[in-house]
Length: 585
Image (tube, rainbow, N blue to C red; front, top):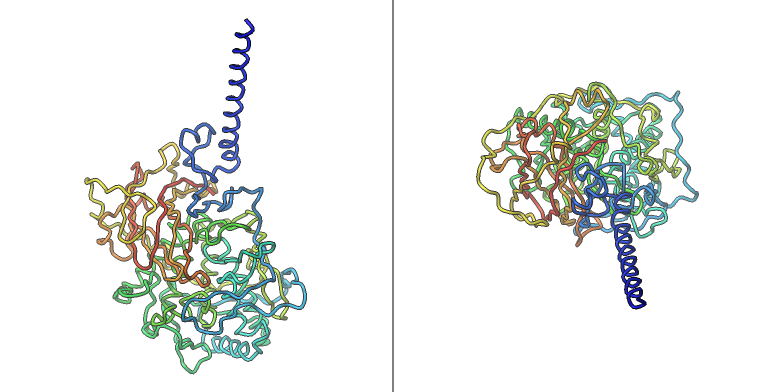
């Protein structure tokens, strides 16, 4: 009896221990998942135990460097809102690294401020409204004012933070990671490939413009806009090609001098020129703009870029317009004979060309255009405080160091500038479908990710089940004031930082070579400039592609899967994986 009782007690103890072990395991696996579902890769059975729909998770992250899709939820490190914070630029700035054969000067940090930065304040509402107008329409007299502003800025001592020399270096410092994050001296502030891209450049242009106006003695002076997305502006404006003008830069691609029509989808290197007629090139550009601004930019994260918080790995993922035409127009303008395509073709030197600023005023104009494109309804920017409270340090027209936040730059009326009415001729340039490029039948070779993209790779990617897909029309979504999209995620991208890298993404186009420029099946492109300070390393990022309208056009809305073809164009790149998720913002 005593022996039997001891045996029962031992068995009971064993059961208690087993129960505790199981409970601990469940807590280890399920509790973190419930608080941060993007932080772990789990089987469908475990996901089901949590009650979460794996197809509705707003995450694309994995250990290979992916990032969340939405502003809500965890950062790229999957730590969740509790540990995430806004990125705050510190006054500390360290000497950046530069590509081989970089053109001096090679020091990008602004002069140290003798005092603490002041917080940004909005200009007086009674100030004149500065109206930014297109270069092709503003007239020679106005362009002469911009040229004089450049002369006056170049005449300032190099030590003056308002000088053209120092203003050009601002972009260099913020793209080489020279500025440090507050409290993280080991981490730089990177303003490309994330939701900081548009706000930083807006703040940068705001102060550049006010410095120019102050030196000119004209409070109403506004920067001109290089509207390369409309036919009249598709090409380097004549005034920038005049060797006698202060706006001329000899370090540009000579074969792209006026009257050459710009290629918004330009590919650097051999075979980059498409040899289209001017009319064909303009139509192609319209289709590129439609994809990047309309069908591919249905969500804030798709257009503005991926979340980037304090402590996160940098460059989580760019928005559509940053890939193309922002990067491609930098490359199209820079001198392609130089190893780094200076000046415009590489981040560290782009600000040295006076055309950089009208180029970026057009990028800023496109941000405003995107906000109001759909039925006149104002699109929403990110509302996440980690985005809105992120801040940059820039010098104003009085040479004072100013801390300005993302929140400060969202309303251009408060900043006292506007854009002259410029049409959007690409608004209805919906690309055509190419017949016969996705023949039925024939098994696809199995693809084991990660894969080095040395040759084209085609994989079948399963779509979310019908229960997770809401097939509502765009009009119904807009009336409900909701934004939702089916999104292809190219995750775990590792690109050679020392080279220009590009690959194209085709959907349902196994015979992708038959797809003409601007064809519907070409869903998107990954196109980067060289990344100063990262020579000998890799850029780790992700790419997102909207599928909703594309699959509708391809009549594939009811299919259970799609074929995705990744085509290498230039540079070395490795792909971690492909997946399709359903997201709402």
